[in-house]
Length: 274
Image (cartoon, rainbow, N blue to C red; front, side):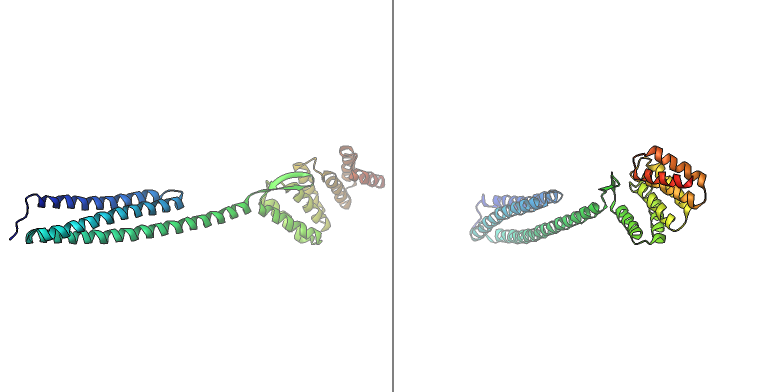
C-alpha cells in the first residue's frame, strides 16, 4: 500500500483557505451590491453590479476548476483516508458552486427589482410634476392689472363671468359671492366685486350693489373700472330715490376722473337731477 508523502496533507488547509476566500469574495460582492442599491444613479449601479459580479464569478470559477483538478490528482496519488477527506472537500466545493449560483440569481433579481423601482419612481415624478404644474399660479392680465392666480381661481372667475355674458344674473351673483369667500386674497377680487355689483343691480338689489361697488373701490380706488363703479353707485342711489347722495357721488366722480367717459355721463346725469 502506498503511503502519503509527508508534505501532501498540508495542501488541505490551503485548499480550505482558498474556499473560504471564495466565500468571502462572494460576501464582499453582496456588500458592494447593498451599497450600490442606495445609489441615486440606479442604471449605473446596475451596470457596475453586473460587471463586478461577472468578474468575481469568472475568478471563482477558475479557482474552483483548479481546486477540482488538484483534488482529482491528489485522489489518485494518496491513500483511502486522504481520498475520503478529498471527497468531503469535493462535496464542499459543490456546495460552494450551488451557493454561488444562488447568489448570482439573487443578484440578478435585485438588479431587475432596482431597474423596476427606478422606472416607477420616474413615472411617479413625472405625474407629480404634472400635478404640480397644474396647481402653480400663472400670470393673468385683467383691466390693465397683472397678477398671478391659481388654476382653480381662474376657472371659477371665468365661470362666473360666463353667467354675466349669458345674462344669468342670479347665477352670476351667487358665483361671484362664492368666489369672494373662497379667494379673499385673489388678484381678481376688485373685478369680482364690480361684476357682483352689476349682477345685483340687474336684479334690482340696489343696496347690495352699492356695497359691492364700494368694496371694490376700497380695494382698488384707482382701478380701471373705478369711474364706472362710482357711476353705478350713483345710478343705484337714483333708483333708491336718494337724489342728494346721487348728486354728491356724481360730483366726486367728475372731480376724481375728469377725463373719463363715466365723467361725461355723470355731467349729463347731474344736469337732469337739477
